[in-house]
Structures are given as structure tokens and as C-alpha cells.
Image 1 (spheres, one colour):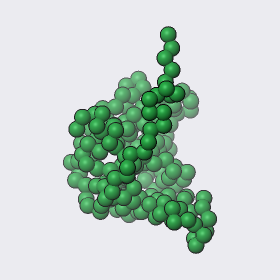
Image 2 (cartoon, one colour):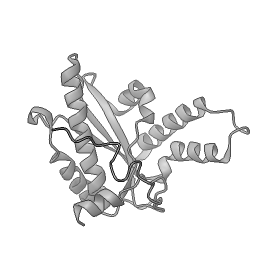
Image 3 (cartoon, helix red, strand yellow):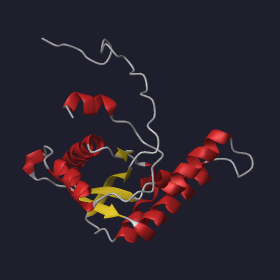
Image 4 (cartoon, helix red, strand yellow):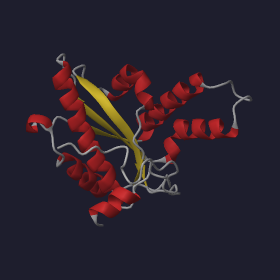
Length: 191
């Protein structure tokens, strides 16, 4: 798949088939992530591939986060109920990938680490799409990051950058319209 096709075709998938994703495919996607650019070429990212009971617990935690922010059951809209179900089940994806990076007391180094890991995560999302897999960049679960770190055995000097479910899509969303498609407001040319 050509790069521009992958960039324009990738979507945040929220419904997955329960089919197992072969380890070789996951490793190929993680190799793409590992080739991202990084500040000082530190390649300061790590990835956790989570399945089974711990994957289910991530969904439970995210569901609790979402439910706490919305009205009580019975008074939620259908859209809210649908999103809550997505959060609790992570769309039924059989795998969750968690991106980590080193934290740092220096705000500039911390920012560099986060940006580097984000670049690797974007590579991961594009590679997954090229392999016929769906993903969804998630930061909502990080509202309970310390609990997730404990669940996953993440060292204290690491922080979670993002989480994505990973699996074969049961449904692809339609492309959302681009805000400022001709880039007349988002780009300034300076001479």
C-alpha cells in the first residue's frame, strides 16, 4: 500500500472482529513503529502487547472513567450508551497495544520523549492499516494512568503515551471531513 493511501485511508476503528491477530503481524507493525524518528535518536519508546484478562481490565477501567462522566444508567442517550459499550469492550478488539516512554523531570526532555513515542505510535497505526487491521488512538484511559501502570507492571520512571485496540475491523467508519481542506487557515508561509 502506498503511503498517501494509508494516511488518507486509516480511520479510528471502533468495532472489531474477535479473530486472533497473528503474532507475526503484530511484530511487523511494531517494527514499523521502531523505525520512527526520535529526539537525539534515543528511540525512547516501549510497547506492551496486552491480551486476555488484562486487556479486559483495561476496558473495565475505561468504562468506569466514561460512566463517571455521564448521567446514570437509564438517563443516558443512545449515543452515550453506545460509546460506553465501546469503552468497556474496546470494541471487541482481541489485542491492546500500550505505548510507553521515559518520563523526565526536565520538561523539555519529557516533551521530546513524548513526541518521539507519538511518532512511533503513528507509524504503528499506519502499519496496522496497511496490514488490514484497525486501531484507535486512545488517551481517555490515561485518566487512571497510575492504576493502568500497576495493572501492567510499568516501571515508575515510565509513562503511558497512548493506547490502541488492535484487530480486524468489523466496520470501517466513513472518512470525516477535513477541517480547512485547502490548508488556507492551518498553514502560513513565512519568508
